[in-house]
Image (cartoon, rainbow, N blue to C red; front, top):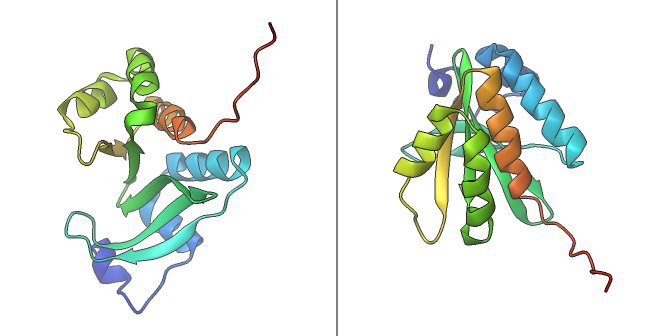
Length: 147
């Protein structure tokens, strides 16, 4: 049964129900990592977007979006937006990413100055790429340089 059929707009799933539908250890690993590393909790939202309709989980730190997770049977998709501020770091990071993520980045055309990467998390290697890309979204405090 499709995700949108299993949980309609009037039937909000719990995080546990989302995880059970996905059925991937990568789901729990990413959620645990984000929630622990960035001290954030997910927001379960319903989207009417034609590209990925239905319930999804969003992670935000302060007012900044870290990522959005879209359930699929057996895997999930993680949307990470790489803006102009993160672009240079992201391009340096890509050399250590999987071929899949590198190709996805290259083929993703910028929209309003950002690349909206929809990454299907289907392996441990891709999961590590996603963790690294999400880390770029976290604001870092400027460190004063000692002269």
